[in-house]
Length: 351
Ligand SMILES: C[S@@+](CC[C@H](N)C(=O)[O-])C[C@H]1O[C@@H](n2cnc3c(N)ncnc32)[C@H](O)[C@@H]1O
Image 1 (tube, rainbow, N blue to C red):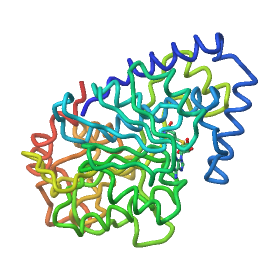
Image 2: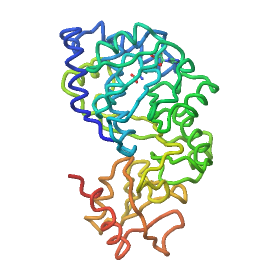
Image 3: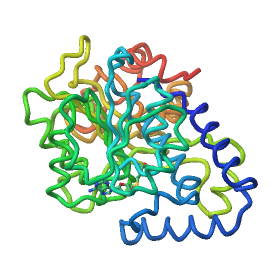
């Protein structure tokens, strides 16, 4: 599913400018946003009704849109006229804004904070159904898709199981890319892949146990460019946060739904940055045989440049192996390199 992120962020920016002219240079608003950000990072929870604050929307709104778009890109497109979508823990509507700019018209928000829901009603350029209450107080059975953006980290384990297990046939969960939140999604994914009726759309390209769960200290996260419009970027800098990129964890899946042409086995996903070593470059990827590396030699200039340009989250086809290389490494040179380039031409030369 494609989200028109640029239009969604333009809408958010225009809304903020109408609600608080000059918001991007408003130090009081930035101080409030910084305090919320610290609370979210350090205590992993923020006060009830916090999302009802314009400072919250200006600071956290863009990340919700960008993260939802990243995760939704993995979800098979459907006829939007038939999609019935619920966004749980909808806050002031930023994550729901991504659904609107994906073309959804039947949208329900579930949120315990009345003031946050009221702000969402003003933000969203669409009439939505709004259900105020705990996520367990809503009847989900008519829904085709459900999302939970930056909520799962706030829920206790029992509510997480409810949220992840029974919301809708297709579920989209996004959260911050820190260790506790990311591992929670990876653990959920490891349970899902045991179900014969479940298809995990992303971010993983295999059904094996997650290699990042083996050691307690590890976790896997994605990183995306935010490409904020100028005022939202200026506000982010005033708050003192990265206005260019963000880390996130996400998971998307369907249960009991047939999607023609969708497989959830095969390929690998780039899970980190390329590392230049003496004479060679190594790129970490995750695939059916766990954590592996793609390796190019610097004398293969074009191939190395292509591999070094690959960003986290890129899905690749690696059908080649070099028998001489280390067991965890696909060495791309000669015929192996040619086959890799042919299989991944689009990823290696992004338009
Ligand atoms: C961090 S905010 C995210 C808001 C929105 N999804 C976004 O990404 O901008 C989390 C929201 O979840 C709501 N929430 C947390 N636990 C909830 C629960 N058990 N039932 C309903 N809402 C809940 C909070 O009130 C808050 O507005």
